[in-house]
Length: 310
Ligand code: ZN
Image (cartoon, rainbow, N blue to C red):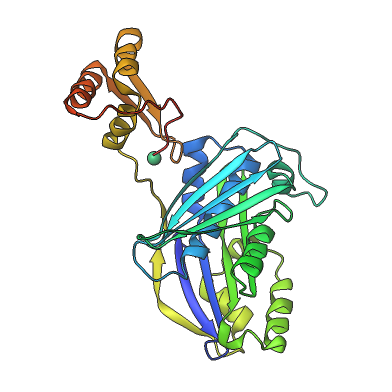
């Protein structure tokens, strides 16, 4: 199945279900960032979580940012997902590899670390974004995002995300989000029923690898609970909003003196977009033009020599 997101409801609208397949976009991220196996799993799980979280927002411009920072060797993870089906992200140390954990699985929790935080920013495209931070539970990401939903958004939720990667690349990736909506939030029996069903799943990627489609999976989980699968499926993809123009804008922040230095010492400047790994090269002419632009500005700019993020 192509990378896509499908929504459904059950229990007379008391349950909201979303499923997403992210196999190809996770493979694209793996190649772009040269991710190790465990880094592929960590970033892939976080990207699937981002797409699942943003799927409940309403305004077309809505985006969700997930920042996970644990004390493990992988360093931070940052993912940016849009309601339009685009997602991008990176990990701080993409090369980190760990031996399998006690269950014989990729040790995502060990790589991310067990202590740290998850920060979720929901941005509807205007006004102040809604930001919330919770502590890490296990570093396995699915548990951590579920904990975030329960404590910060007070929505009883079950979230399963997974990535299956082997030496040929990513073979299956994606996730499921099941939520009990406010109208049914006091229905303890419904919540218990949902939890027990989700616990019967051994994960998300085994289902995909059995060639099950998202509607098949919904049917198995919620088929006897008044399941309604919404007809529209949405394509999802890895996509970054970076551009050469943005790189030039970012370079401008260095100020005239630094730019002149870059011309004399390096004949230009190279910048890498952290989110997608794209390399941009500005030559001396580009930098000279930036200096000219700066000199036309009446207000002196403050000089920031931080890493460039755009
Ligand atoms: Zn980019």
